[in-house]
Length: 239
Image (cartoon, helix red, strand yellow):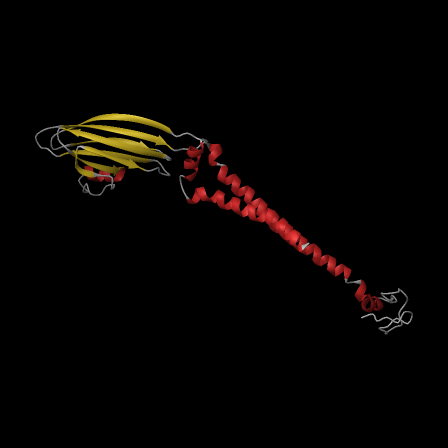
């Protein structure tokens, strides 16, 4: 019986814990649901490409502002000529400070690079919307430089049905784990109550006498002499 109760417990408790762990993984590893969705074909990433032609005046700069929504990834390539350019990737705060002369171009993202004619970089998916400023600074004081900026946007967003899957798994896991733990505890409690009730007849010789009822032999059922621990009818001990 004990073995069957333990087996019943693990049939619910262990799978429930496993489902909770699986459901929690996407919250601990951002982008996991989107990746699995794309790999299994449940969801398909949408890709968009846009191209900007930028003219950078001598001793001047130009920029491209590009908003990136939550769950989007960006890959960019820059082709400049005839002169090379310095490229800086900034957020809104750094760009404003840089324009006002309050910050050096070094206060930018690590994807930035100096003296480039051909350059590529990527921005990983973010959990919140962000605006990026791609700043091209001329390295020449006498001639202008043209730059072609090609941006490829990949939307890694997941269908709401798929995105809710981890929550559903956690809910099912919690329910199964609680049921498994409750089933085990309930069985133990029932057994303890059963043992208590079954032990009452064996001890009846003592407390039934206190209630005024005559104790009887637990072997033959005949009345016992008061205070005697042996049956006068069958002679067997009551202890």
